Image (tube, rainbow, N blue to C red; front, side):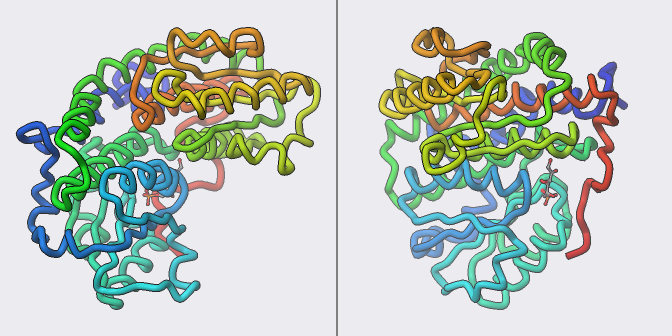
Length: 369
Ligand code: F6R
């Protein structure tokens, strides 16, 4: 049941304020994060972990890339993200102090399941971040941290993505608490961010109208680029993946700093570029770098669509369109920034007359390797 929406994808984008709230529910206690499923592994084991490898495919891997920054910051454990289907073939360096966290909406993705089985054989601790209750991957893993986003029907993942980032952040905060690497203030600050998130996500969802207009004007566009820095980089990749998947146009995401190392040659007159602009309050250095990136591409004719925090006026002289989002700490911005990009893909797909929920050549769950 689409609940009055034109597609399941639209319904699921709209559900994000509630689905993220559901991911957090029951996992905050006394100003800190406690995930009962992780607590069951025993604090001693969690304290012994010296390396985390996140394995996932597609959108789930981008959730992992976003969360890697947060987990490293809070738990002070090196985190790397590997695509499930690449993991086994590199003879990964694993030990009994390694934790492998798999991320999968369906919990049935064969590439990820095979990677998890490989990790289990090698004796590492396996944690599954999964949206589907009792799916194969969480059943095989040492601990299952469910995202509780509710069923996701549209092939293009939206609410599962924000729920995955949220669940992984909670894992990072739990580990940080147990390992003593996060201060009580920092933990309370993150918990406050989670509490404020549903209202902010609602505001981000409300960019729909503005983004729909944009997609309407850009109906004939054949290529779109996305730029981000730090946690904005995987969001750029995710924005591009959504467009490829459901609007069938060429799209690419770049780390903003990488522009001058090659991709800037792609910029010519009228090339649309979405730029995820970090907060000038909480990430001033990154903010100024991204603003200069915007100046560089604008000078070469790009059509700049800047996604900024409300009140950021630095980009106004150089942006053709500005999408404003509520204020959030730097690590929490991706959860808001991805929403206008989800709407953009949906609206571009719609103006092109395509099937938003059932894109060609794709299945919701990829159960073959
Ligand atoms: C993108 C998308 C895919 C999945 C990927 C992993 O919108 O849906 O990239 O994210 O196939 O699927 P799960 O999370 O079920 O393992």
